[in-house]
Length: 192
Image (tube, rainbow, N blue to C red; front, top):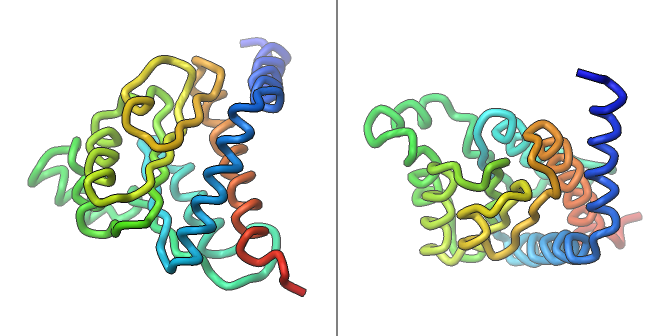
C-alpha cells in the first residue's frame, strides 16, 4: 500500500462529497428531520456491522453526551452494543434478526433510524429497515456508491462516492459529525 495514494483517495472522495450539491442537501434534510423528531420527544436509533457498528455507537455517543458544547442530552440508542440482546436474538432467531427485533422493541412512530452499511445489502440492516418502515420510523441510510437494497427502502440515502470500505467508513463518520453539529445547532442555537 502506498500511503500517499491512500490519503489522496480519501481526500478525493471527500472532495466529491463537498462538490455534490445533492449530497449536501440530503445532509441538511436529514439534520432537519432529526431536529424535528427531537422537538417531538422522539429518538434516534443507529445500527451497523463491524466498523459500521462502531460508527453507529459513535453517533449515539455524540448525541447523548455532547458534540461541540455542553447541552441537554439527546435520546439515541445504538443497537449494536448489548451483547446479551445480540446473542439471544442471534441464537433464538438468527443473526439476520439482530436489529429487526430491537427495532420492534424500541422504535416508535416518528423516531429516526440511521442504518449504516458500506455495501448497502447487509441482511440484518435491510430487515431492520423494513421493520422500521412498518412502524412509521424515518430511515436514513449511509452506504457506498454501488447500487444496493438500501436505496430502495430508505427515506434518505447518502451514497458515498467510493467502493473502498475503509474510505466509505471514513466518509460516514465525517457525515455523522456534520449531522451531530447541525442537530446540536438546530436544537440549541439560542443557547448563551
